[in-house]
Image (cartoon, rainbow, N blue to C red; front, side, top):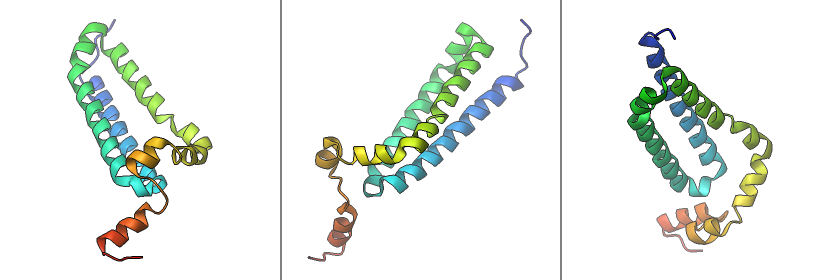
Length: 131
């Protein structure tokens, strides 16, 4: 097999980094819009996941490339990124049903304290207004 120029893996890592940042920005916007009462918790969770993913990708990239080669490793990374980015299709089709279903989960209602009035109660508490 012909050896690849150094620019090919560099461009591949650049595209993967761009797609990770873009996907994070789009998902943060979606979550803040869809789950506004618990936006803080969801943003922290998403950023922690992104940081873990970025660390693991950068930590294991070199051993992965040494084991299976540039072509297969970057092909796998492109496949993983594409699969994650294609999750917008089911969210576009069934997103409203997913949001309505998750509002009723015990994790959301009891642990996190989700309800539709949570935002209003927080504002009242901040300004010490009693109802």
